[in-house]
Image (cartoon, rainbow, N blue to C red; front, top):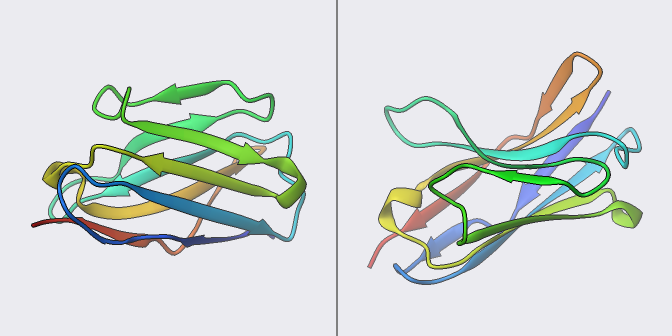
Length: 115
């Protein structure tokens, strides 16, 4: 069983930055695909960014150049650095981890971008 715990969300003004963290427990995920997704009110959950065990990254078009995903395998942790935040980035952000055919999810952390 894998547990994922996100932190770092909050209220930020447009143009500001936040750094999300996701700590994994229950299994070493150094070789597993991990990612961040988000879900805004009334919308479906969408991909934000993913990172492989080897560090290869992929981003949604809407976040390229503004968001950076990274991981610290020694800490079993994945991060999402979010810069130049826009109101459209407001959502609950979820951490995910793929283990064989199973995708595990965290409980989510709220990010609100508003002046």
